[in-house]
Length: 225
Image 1: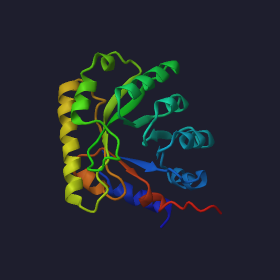
Image 2: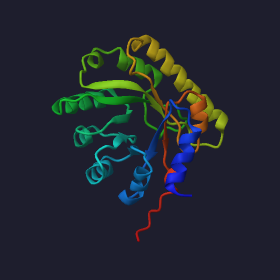
Image 3: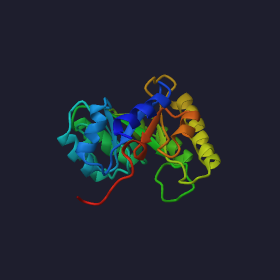
């Protein structure tokens, strides 16, 4: 099936309040442009260098999301244009984003990444670390970032009961944090969870943003022509 058909089918399966982030990592501009020409405007990239290259070579009405692990020394390359950073996993990284955003006189929207998977390889804050970050004076003093929600990656497994449990945990954490720290902040409303293999379960468990790549673009082909 075509990329346009894939996007239309996925969008028609999602509730109106759920945003589709098309994960375009490793795919060339001409392939991503098929999705763009089908009307899609929100794309997610894992690596800063690739994100910058695609931003420079593609139309400027695209909303670019950085969804992969972000190193502090790379923030400066995307601070001028990135729409949303999904993967903030420390107060130090948040401070750097705040500082770089200030240089461009803008506020950068961020999601705090929570470690919900059983794999140790996944990044993210624990529930305790999240509380510590949100209650810190350093966080309260930041003026150029806006925390708009949480993000999490479930365990890579066929066991959907475990995946559902992890998503449920994240949704409960999101609700308690919203009530405690963001009750008067209408922008704190995003829960980014769910990828190609598990997004249907994620949506059932409260996701407002799904990150889908292979179901749109097919599996990545690393061979050169």
